[in-house]
Length: 120
Image 1 (cartoon, rainbow, N blue to C red):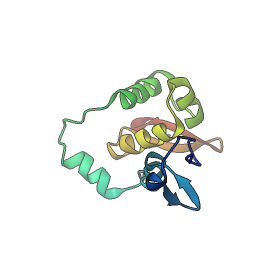
Image 2: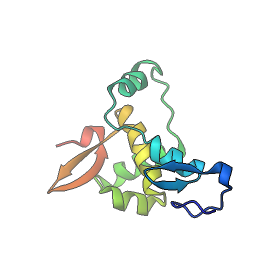
Image 3: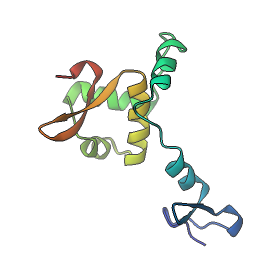
């Protein structure tokens, strides 16, 4: 059988059903375990439990550097320019938001991602 989301071959015992789709375990986790951008507990944890030793992964560092160089950017342009998937970008933006490194805002009716201190 094939995963209805990614097309991977999966055996009958590996099938997960979510929202009427039969998917592999990876797609199941992508669908059900999306990080929440506005999560006060995650913000508190990122700020207080890790102290000042916040380490960014490679994708997070690339996002922050891109925004420093290019300024506020629509998410679609960001994931295309950085060569990462939309799901990965969403996950990294959520983590960076919890660390108060980036945020989203509307500019001229369009959503853009910007550095925390670039908000107008």
